[in-house]
Amino acid sequence: MGPGAPEGPGDGSPAARTRLLLAEDQGMMRGALALLLGLEEDMEVVAQVASGDEIVPAALAARPDVALLDIELPGRSGLDAAAELRTRCPGCRVLILTTFGRPGYLRRAMEAGAAGFLVKDGPVEELAVAVRRVLAGETVVDPALAAAALSAGPSPLTAREGDVLRAAVDGATVSDIAGALRLSESTVRNYLSSAIGKTGTRNRMEAVREARSRGWL
Image 1 (cartoon, one colour):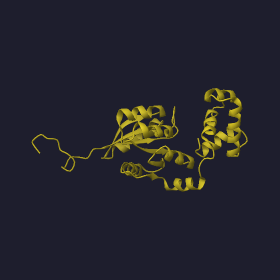
Image 2: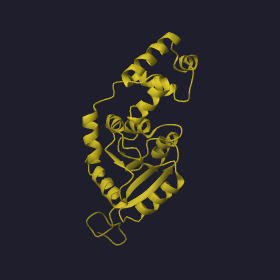
Image 3: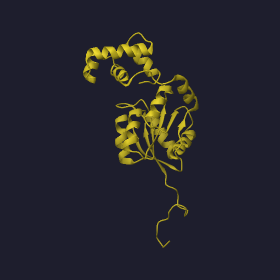
Image 4: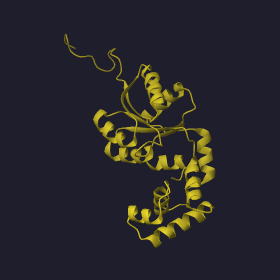
Protein backbone atom coordinates (compact mmCIF):
# COMPACT_ATOMS: atom_id res chain seq x y z
CA MET A 1 0.00 0.00 0.00
CA GLY A 2 1.46 3.36 -1.02
CA PRO A 3 2.20 6.25 1.31
CA GLY A 4 -0.90 8.13 2.43
CA ALA A 5 -3.32 5.39 1.27
CA PRO A 6 -6.20 4.75 3.70
CA GLU A 7 -5.98 1.69 5.85
CA GLY A 8 -8.64 -1.00 5.39
CA PRO A 9 -10.04 -3.85 7.46
CA GLY A 10 -7.41 -6.28 8.70
CA ASP A 11 -4.57 -3.76 8.52
CA GLY A 12 -4.76 -2.52 12.09
CA SER A 13 -7.32 0.25 11.58
CA PRO A 14 -10.24 0.38 14.04
CA ALA A 15 -13.43 -1.35 12.97
CA ALA A 16 -16.36 0.84 11.99
CA ARG A 17 -18.71 1.58 14.86
CA THR A 18 -22.25 0.24 14.88
CA ARG A 19 -24.60 3.14 14.19
CA LEU A 20 -27.57 3.33 16.54
CA LEU A 21 -30.91 5.14 16.51
CA LEU A 22 -32.75 5.59 19.83
CA ALA A 23 -36.51 6.19 20.03
CA GLU A 24 -37.59 6.95 23.61
CA ASP A 25 -40.04 9.64 24.74
CA GLN A 26 -38.57 10.10 28.22
CA GLY A 27 -35.69 12.52 27.84
CA MET A 28 -33.74 11.33 30.88
CA MET A 29 -33.96 7.68 29.83
CA ARG A 30 -33.02 8.53 26.25
CA GLY A 31 -30.05 10.59 27.35
CA ALA A 32 -28.84 7.90 29.74
CA LEU A 33 -29.06 5.19 27.09
CA ALA A 34 -27.24 7.36 24.55
CA LEU A 35 -24.48 8.11 27.05
CA LEU A 36 -24.00 4.52 28.19
CA LEU A 37 -24.16 2.97 24.72
CA GLY A 38 -21.82 5.66 23.43
CA LEU A 39 -19.22 4.45 25.92
CA GLU A 40 -19.06 1.12 24.10
CA GLU A 41 -16.00 1.19 21.82
CA ASP A 42 -17.85 -0.33 18.89
CA MET A 43 -21.06 1.75 19.07
CA GLU A 44 -22.14 5.25 18.13
CA VAL A 45 -25.56 6.85 18.65
CA VAL A 46 -26.26 8.73 15.42
CA ALA A 47 -29.91 9.70 15.99
CA GLN A 48 -32.27 10.24 18.93
CA VAL A 49 -36.02 10.82 18.63
CA ALA A 50 -38.84 11.32 21.13
CA SER A 51 -41.88 10.39 19.02
CA GLY A 52 -42.90 7.54 16.77
CA ASP A 53 -43.50 9.88 13.83
CA GLU A 54 -39.81 10.83 13.81
CA ILE A 55 -38.41 7.29 13.60
CA VAL A 56 -38.56 6.59 9.87
CA PRO A 57 -37.42 10.08 8.74
CA ALA A 58 -34.51 9.94 11.22
CA ALA A 59 -33.55 6.46 10.03
CA LEU A 60 -33.62 7.53 6.37
CA ALA A 61 -31.37 10.48 7.19
CA ALA A 62 -28.92 8.80 9.58
CA ARG A 63 -28.92 5.26 8.13
CA PRO A 64 -28.41 3.41 11.44
CA ASP A 65 -27.39 -0.23 11.61
CA VAL A 66 -29.69 -0.91 14.58
CA ALA A 67 -32.78 0.99 15.77
CA LEU A 68 -33.73 0.67 19.44
CA LEU A 69 -37.42 1.48 19.67
CA ASP A 70 -39.77 1.94 22.59
CA ILE A 71 -43.35 0.81 21.87
CA GLU A 72 -45.58 3.43 23.47
CA LEU A 73 -44.49 6.68 21.87
CA PRO A 74 -46.34 9.91 21.06
CA GLY A 75 -47.76 10.07 17.55
CA ARG A 76 -47.07 6.52 16.47
CA SER A 77 -46.13 3.27 18.14
CA GLY A 78 -42.67 1.78 17.80
CA LEU A 79 -44.28 -1.38 16.43
CA ASP A 80 -45.87 0.50 13.53
CA ALA A 81 -42.59 2.25 12.81
CA ALA A 82 -40.74 -1.08 12.91
CA ALA A 83 -42.99 -2.47 10.17
CA GLU A 84 -42.25 0.52 7.94
CA LEU A 85 -38.52 0.36 8.65
CA ARG A 86 -38.52 -3.19 7.31
CA THR A 87 -39.41 -1.88 3.84
CA ARG A 88 -37.95 1.64 3.90
CA CYS A 89 -34.65 0.79 5.63
CA PRO A 90 -34.09 -2.94 5.06
CA GLY A 91 -30.48 -2.71 6.23
CA CYS A 92 -31.52 -1.53 9.69
CA ARG A 93 -32.15 -4.16 12.35
CA VAL A 94 -34.83 -3.33 14.93
CA LEU A 95 -34.57 -4.05 18.63
CA ILE A 96 -37.69 -3.31 20.66
CA LEU A 97 -36.88 -2.03 24.15
CA THR A 98 -39.90 -1.49 26.36
CA THR A 99 -41.10 -1.14 29.93
CA PHE A 100 -44.08 -3.37 29.22
CA GLY A 101 -43.27 -7.07 28.86
CA ARG A 102 -46.59 -8.08 27.33
CA PRO A 103 -46.84 -11.32 25.32
CA GLY A 104 -49.04 -9.67 22.70
CA TYR A 105 -46.41 -6.99 22.11
CA LEU A 106 -43.78 -9.64 21.46
CA ARG A 107 -45.91 -11.36 18.83
CA ARG A 108 -46.65 -8.06 17.11
CA ALA A 109 -42.99 -7.08 17.20
CA MET A 110 -41.94 -10.29 15.50
CA GLU A 111 -44.69 -9.86 12.89
CA ALA A 112 -43.37 -6.34 12.25
CA GLY A 113 -39.92 -7.75 11.52
CA ALA A 114 -38.15 -6.87 14.75
CA ALA A 115 -34.95 -8.80 15.43
CA GLY A 116 -35.18 -8.52 19.20
CA PHE A 117 -37.42 -7.67 22.14
CA LEU A 118 -36.07 -6.74 25.56
CA VAL A 119 -37.59 -5.31 28.73
CA LYS A 120 -35.88 -2.19 30.12
CA ASP A 121 -35.04 -3.63 33.52
CA GLY A 122 -31.76 -5.23 32.40
CA PRO A 123 -28.22 -3.79 32.65
CA VAL A 124 -26.87 -1.77 29.72
CA GLU A 125 -24.14 -4.36 29.20
CA GLU A 126 -26.81 -6.90 28.24
CA LEU A 127 -28.34 -4.38 25.87
CA ALA A 128 -24.98 -3.84 24.18
CA VAL A 129 -24.58 -7.60 23.78
CA ALA A 130 -28.10 -7.79 22.31
CA VAL A 131 -27.25 -5.07 19.79
CA ARG A 132 -24.19 -7.01 18.65
CA ARG A 133 -26.23 -10.22 18.37
CA VAL A 134 -29.01 -8.75 16.25
CA LEU A 135 -26.42 -7.07 14.05
CA ALA A 136 -24.86 -10.51 13.54
CA GLY A 137 -28.22 -11.81 12.30
CA GLU A 138 -29.52 -13.40 15.49
CA THR A 139 -32.95 -12.94 17.06
CA VAL A 140 -32.80 -11.87 20.70
CA VAL A 141 -35.86 -12.19 22.93
CA ASP A 142 -36.26 -11.94 26.70
CA PRO A 143 -36.59 -15.64 27.73
CA ALA A 144 -39.37 -15.14 30.28
CA LEU A 145 -41.40 -13.09 27.83
CA ALA A 146 -40.92 -15.68 25.09
CA ALA A 147 -42.33 -18.38 27.36
CA ALA A 148 -45.28 -16.19 28.33
CA ALA A 149 -46.04 -15.42 24.68
CA LEU A 150 -46.10 -19.09 23.77
CA SER A 151 -48.53 -19.88 26.58
CA ALA A 152 -50.75 -16.86 25.91
CA GLY A 153 -51.43 -17.62 22.27
CA PRO A 154 -52.20 -15.09 19.53
CA SER A 155 -54.58 -12.16 19.83
CA PRO A 156 -58.21 -13.19 19.25
CA LEU A 157 -59.04 -9.78 17.79
CA THR A 158 -59.31 -9.25 14.05
CA ALA A 159 -57.43 -6.33 12.53
CA ARG A 160 -60.64 -4.32 12.19
CA GLU A 161 -61.71 -5.04 15.78
CA GLY A 162 -58.32 -3.78 16.89
CA ASP A 163 -58.75 -0.62 14.78
CA VAL A 164 -62.12 0.08 16.38
CA LEU A 165 -60.79 -0.42 19.92
CA ARG A 166 -57.84 1.88 19.24
CA ALA A 167 -60.24 4.53 17.99
CA ALA A 168 -62.22 4.13 21.22
CA VAL A 169 -59.20 4.62 23.50
CA ASP A 170 -60.00 8.25 24.38
CA GLY A 171 -63.70 7.63 24.98
CA ALA A 172 -64.79 8.39 21.41
CA THR A 173 -68.46 7.85 20.60
CA VAL A 174 -69.70 5.31 18.06
CA SER A 175 -70.32 8.20 15.70
CA ASP A 176 -66.77 9.50 16.18
CA ILE A 177 -65.28 6.06 15.52
CA ALA A 178 -67.45 5.55 12.45
CA GLY A 179 -66.33 8.88 11.02
CA ALA A 180 -62.66 8.28 11.77
CA LEU A 181 -62.61 4.80 10.23
CA ARG A 182 -65.15 5.47 7.47
CA LEU A 183 -67.50 2.76 8.67
CA SER A 184 -71.21 2.75 9.35
CA GLU A 185 -72.29 3.13 12.96
CA SER A 186 -73.92 -0.31 12.90
CA THR A 187 -70.67 -1.87 11.69
CA VAL A 188 -68.76 -0.13 14.49
CA ARG A 189 -71.26 -1.45 17.05
CA ASN A 190 -70.84 -4.98 15.68
CA TYR A 191 -67.04 -4.77 15.92
CA LEU A 192 -67.22 -3.35 19.44
CA SER A 193 -69.65 -6.06 20.54
CA SER A 194 -67.39 -8.76 19.11
CA ALA A 195 -64.28 -7.27 20.76
CA ILE A 196 -66.06 -7.01 24.12
CA GLY A 197 -67.04 -10.65 23.88
CA LYS A 198 -63.56 -11.81 22.92
CA THR A 199 -61.94 -9.90 25.78
CA GLY A 200 -64.49 -11.15 28.31
CA THR A 201 -65.37 -7.62 29.41
CA ARG A 202 -68.58 -5.65 29.95
CA ASN A 203 -68.09 -2.53 27.84
CA ARG A 204 -65.82 -0.91 25.31
CA MET A 205 -63.54 0.86 27.81
CA GLU A 206 -62.97 -2.37 29.74
CA ALA A 207 -62.26 -4.08 26.41
CA VAL A 208 -59.70 -1.40 25.55
CA ARG A 209 -57.96 -1.78 28.93
CA GLU A 210 -57.91 -5.57 28.70
CA ALA A 211 -56.61 -5.59 25.13
CA ARG A 212 -53.89 -3.06 25.98
CA SER A 213 -52.83 -4.96 29.11
CA ARG A 214 -52.32 -8.07 26.98
CA GLY A 215 -50.43 -6.21 24.28
CA TRP A 216 -53.11 -6.75 21.61
CA LEU A 217 -53.34 -3.03 20.82
